[in-house]
Amino acid sequence: MRYSKLCLLNAVFHEPLERSAAMKLVRSTKMLVLHEFRRYVRIPVMTEVGVVISDGGRMTATSQEVSSGGMSLKGHHVPEIGSMVEVSFSLLTLPRVWVRGNVTWKKPNKNFGVRFDPTDERRQRLKEWIVAYLEG
Image 1 (spheres, helix red, strand yellow):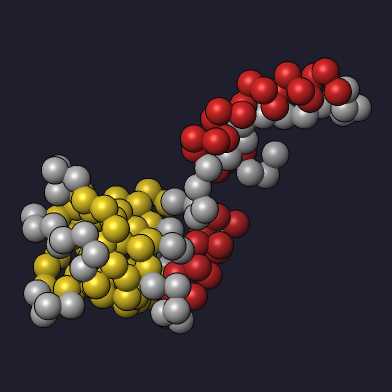
Image 2: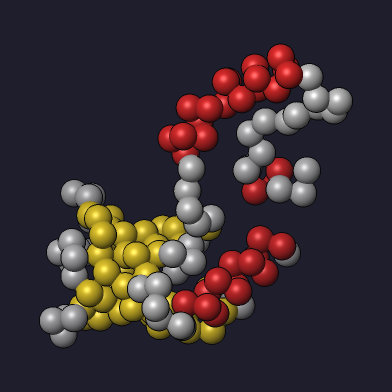
C-alpha cells in the first residue's frame, strides 16, 4: 500500500490467491498495463528550463513533467526533432543541474520532449532527487 499515494496501484490481489480471481484481475487490467507502461516515473513539476541547442541557439522553456530519462517542455520556440540540446534547471531541493539530451517529439501546441543522454553522468543527481522525492 505504500505505493498507492503515487497512483501506481491498479489492482489488489487478495490472499489466499485463487486462480479464478487472479485471472479475472489480470484480464481486467491487462490493457491498462499494456497501454500505460512507462519506463520511468514521471513527476509533474513546473520550473524554468534553459535550453542550449547544438547549433548555438538558446531558449527558455517551462517543464511539464520530469523523469530520470527525460522531460517534457513547453516553449515559445520548439527545436527540431533530433536536435541535440543541453537543458539546465533546478527542482525544489535540487540545485541547478545540466543534462545533455535530444529532442524526440514535438506537438503543434509548442510542447516537446527531451530524452536525456544515458551516458551523461550528471543525470545521476536527478535520479537521486527523484528517488528521495518519491520516498519523502
